[in-house]
Image (tube, rainbow, N blue to C red; front, side, top):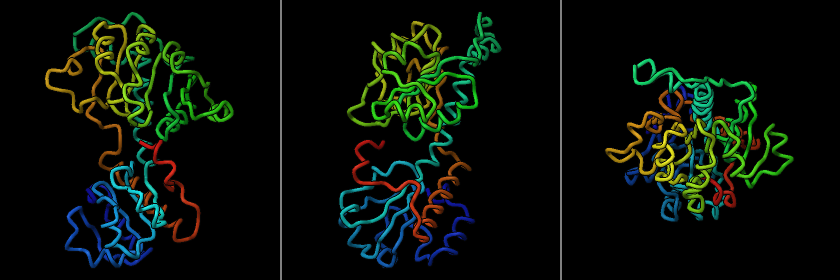
Length: 315
């Protein structure tokens, strides 16, 4: 995994900032206990071992961990925070390609691009109407890192943006340039609905049949968050009716089971979880992590320090 994220220039930069005691370690790091014991700082990415009491016993000098990827929930434990270890993740960097994918899907959906693709293949006639993107309404569900980046990118378009997020107040919504509404109203008014909520147990199937039934005929539902947030059976029922469109980068399960209608329905665009950082985009996460390390060494505030109390609301 490290080879996907860290290019040679990143190792060169690290060596200019600190003494490297180990260029790369994977999960099976038992043979590298001596190197870990020397580390004051760890820079890691996907595949980071769980930072529990046992791990911390092997890293008595550890003061900071910089994670060149998104969610830290797979490896963080209370022990890390109890030791007072500084933690930062490159989630803001990973949010950028997801938001770019989302905005592209929004713009193309309003241009009826997916229907035009079917026409070109001889599968359907030309759509009767191509509404375009002038004064259309986009609903953003959750002002997460991705949601906020989507909102920022949409400022360049003549679109009305609605936001549902119970953690965002009216004043913050005004600063973001969006109209805060409740979820049912967002579903009813939006020409495109884009889901960006965190994958938390309490939010499982937050998008259900009654909400999906409120969507306009011809509207598009986009999910680049997690499949478990959506009642897939309810979504399939709406899609089979032909009433709405969907652009899905995530499903539940993932990938869809063999024979799932999501593979063949003409009003579904399915991509295999490619919205996040891919190939060259992964280097942006390494850049972010090393920028955070540089701030830490200079005694400057971090851009994305992870606090213990924030974990409950993080994906």
